[in-house]
Length: 116
Image (cartoon, rainbow, N blue to C red):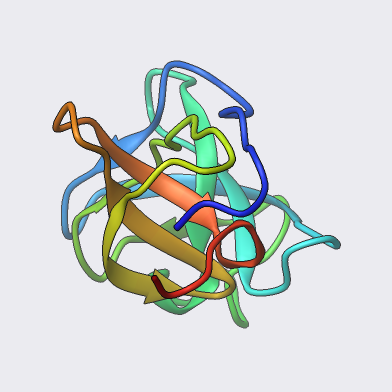
């Protein structure tokens, strides 16, 4: 059950394949564990830090480096309204991957949801 409405923050969403190279940017201070990344085409999105290899040139993936994705991931968010019912099936760093009654899918902040 959606207890607080959420509107997706950006579009289009970044979708990466396993082994894809991305440029890493800033970490999200509001949502720990997420890092802004851009693909070779310049499209950006928030990826879970644990899905990124170490930067070439050293260390854990962080701003200004190059990393490879350890698995496929879609950064798409789902716009939801309070009172709506959604089905969640994945959880990462304070977000849940949900599907609405229309079949649309995307990430929703966990604090917008409660078990029905």
